[in-house]
Amino acid sequence: PIVSASDENTYTEALSTWKNLASPAKADVGRVNTHGYEYGGGRRDHLFEAVCEGPNPKALWNSEYGDGDGTGLSLVTNLNLDFYYLRPTA
Image 1 (tube, one colour):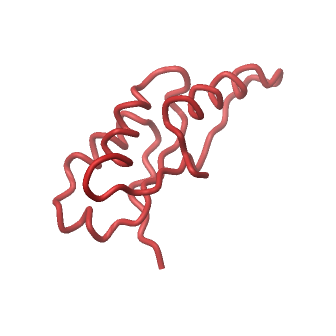
Image 2: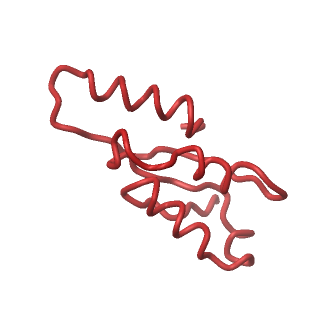
């Protein structure tokens, strides 16, 4: 089974949690999950760099997103930002 961390609500929280995990804990993690509730904010690129690059890269998922925009424009805008900067595998 894959251990996922940390399923935070925002990219900023996910980055902070990841940076504060001890190396042995990071070694046990197979995937980092985040939620997209920071919408157009947050540094997706910094989260990607911290999790997916380096000596022991992990998969990165955006596991939850929602907004109150019934037009779908916010969803599409944020998905494009995710695809470009976060590069999630799911």
